Image 1 (cartoon, rainbow, N blue to C red):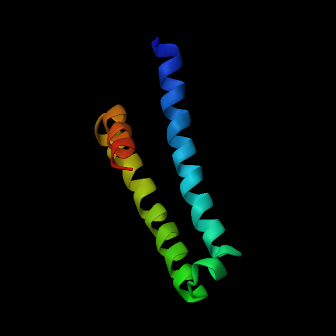
Image 2: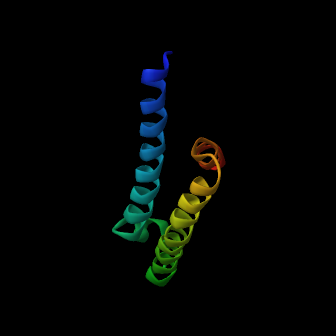
Image 3: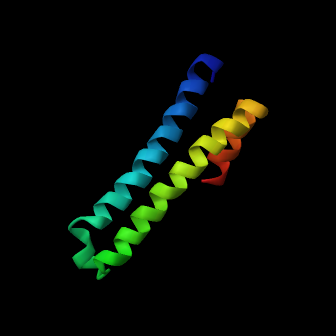
Length: 81
C-alpha cells in the first residue's frame, strides 16, 4: 500500500477508535444502564473520570509531540489503545 493511502487510513482508524470509545460510554449512560444494572452515580463517575482523563492527556500528548517526534507519540497512542 502506498504512503498516500496509508497515512489517511491510520488517522481515520484512530478517529474511529476515539468515536467508538465515547459512543460506548454515552450509550451506557443512557437507556442501557437498566439492562446492565448499574447505578446512575456509578455511570456519572465513569463519564466524569473519562472526560477528566481526556482533559489531562490530550494537552499532555500535544506537549509531548512538540518536544519529541509527533509520529512516535501518535504510534505509541494507537499501540496503547
